[in-house]
Image (cartoon, rainbow, N blue to C red; front, side):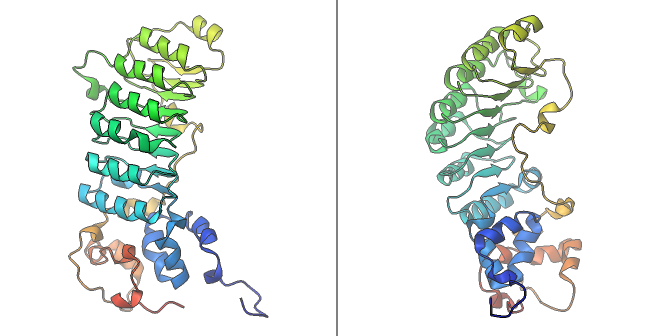
Length: 322
């Protein structure tokens, strides 16, 4: 800042401060608008400062698998090992999960519901997730007690686990007591446990209660085989809140036990992300408003990945940075 300047220039803010500010923007704005403001802002969003917490769960639930792969590679790589929180839905193979584990040195919260991950890959990489304190593997139909046991043995800091299922996912299964026993024997520090619509027995739940002595909340909605007496719970676990099998409201999604993942703005409907599948056409920087591009899917495809790659703006005909 030059002598006599009344206000500090925004482009002179340190990257850490810029990252904190940009975290309040939508994903669209962070990736496509901010980099074109000035060089210092472009550097900030190309580095780890904006990507210590990544939430693409809503978008990933409806995107093309190839687009999800590309987005994960870009954003997780940008975090440079400083990723603390990741929310993404529907990882479609073990390779993606392994890639995340390679960059999980600082990861504390991991939400990967509806992912096609297997017991074998979880057993292989659980040791790289040792810093995890909160894990959501709800609706992951290909894992079982084997995976949960591996997680419990290696993730010693784990205090929150979401392992909810959909009733259709458990149709035809006889029991999932192996998961309950894996939790009981390997996750003694759990404070929050969600097991909605699991085929678990009263006996296996009692094992969890006797060994996970720090539990504060359990979601057992839809666990029809579980019969826990109210008097027994009040006398033996006075600090424990239990959502019983017949409770139907979505309490677990609205409580504030674990800090909610940041939500992006309502305009996130644009997240068809057509430009991820662009054919490489040149972008013509004319006088038309950039806002119109987000209203026109055809133009959206023309934007491709150039906003992500962090290359010099001049290569794409962008106006020079201030």
